[in-house]
Length: 352
Image 1: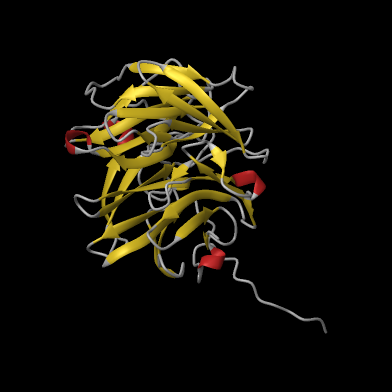
Image 2: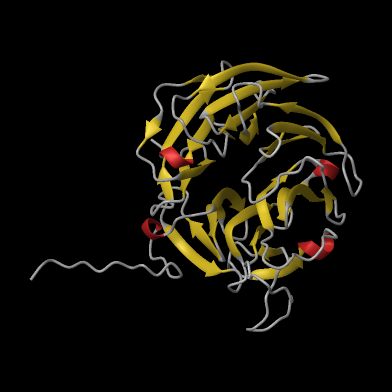
């Protein structure tokens, strides 16, 4: 008789971080949760993870089956609450938005979650608040990227949503209602793009549909913002931007592309391309993350299971590209640890 081993394949009841591929994660200091924790999401589930050991502490189901992944998560420090949004289910030929076991929800919902209990406080219908049309039959709408950014009156939730056949920016700041930016150059389809903040009032949007980095003025408080400026990366080696970050140490913009390159741009009354860093790994860089503790840029290359570290001052690789990861998607930083958020079987892995 051969050897046998039991495997837990129940995604709804993970027992450790070795059984929980993740969509997104954040590291936050939550007073109600007792300090710094990693909070991560996958589909309708939220996970609370030890930031020192990477061990799963607890998890909860945020919503019923209507909340689909990939899911996004942010944190509102003013009210000490997690903010979670994802996608609705795609039901061909059915759009009724009715409650109950036989209804189908085509709205985009935002869930406010208590970090200490992982229980939902509020469910906000973003489709209604943004004044969006109800999703058409056979389509799927949801949130692509979501971050808590800004200061003062501009502090709040910023993100990218997709509705039917376009993507656009949204925001909720200063106690105002949600506002959005529609663009005739918006991304079509479920395209994974990102946004970055320069620490003042500029927001940069990586728009892969148009191959552009778009500059938006965060201080413009109208329903439909005006694009300030843009830079088309396509002429620079057929580059398409996905991940985007602003490094405080230089003030420049860094865009990760589908070619495994990072484009360094500056902005002063117009965009300028400074340099290109080739990681040597031919894969899409969906995220570029600045580590405030060592001043470097971390670029997970999802499809190639690799992570490149780049010096923002020179836009050059720091050492060799790091391998041994499983679908690395994002990076989380603390004073003592750097963690990799992964789409593979091991959801959280320490960067070494």
